[in-house]
Length: 185
Image 1 (tube, helix red, strand yellow):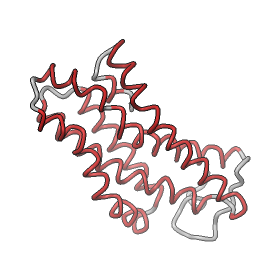
Image 2 (image 1 turned 30 degrees about the vertical axis):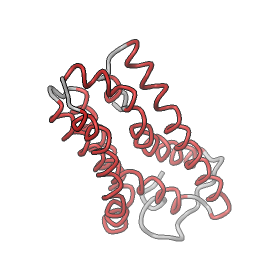
Image 3 (image 1 turned 45 degrees about the horizontal axis):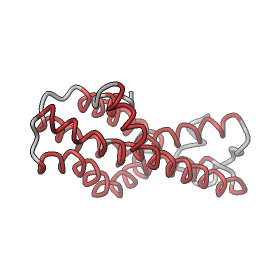
C-alpha cells in the first residue's frame, strides 16, 4: 500500500478488489468506520447501568448518548474537507487515534460529566475517520472494482451498527459497561 494509492490524486486508483493490498485497504476502512458505526448503537443498552453507577440524571444520560452523534453529525463535512486538504490517509489515521483515545477516556470516566465530554470527543474522532475511510476507497480502487468495494464498506458498516445493541448487552451483562468503550482499543 503506497501513499500514492491512497493520496489526494484522483486517477491513481489501481488497487483491485481481490488483491492483497486491496483487501488491506478495505479492511482498514471497514474497521475504522465500523468502530464509529458500532459506537452509535452499542452504548444505548448500557445507559441504565451507567446511570446507576454515576447516579446520572436523564439529561446526562441523553448527553452521553447524543453528544457522540451530535458531534459526529455536525463535524463530518469538516472531516471530509480536512481529508481533501491534508490527505485522506493522514486524517483517517488521526481520526482513528483520536477515536481510540476518546474511547479510553470514556472507559475510565470517573463521573457522568467526564463521560459526556469524552463522548463528544469520540464523535469528533468519528467525524475525522468516517469520511476518510470512504475517500480512501474512492481513490484507491480501480474504477471497475470501486462499486464493489464501496458496497462492502457500506454493508459491513450497517452490520456493525446493527450488532451494536447485542454486543453492548453482552458486555454489560457479563463484563462491565466500561468495556462498551474499551472494545474500541
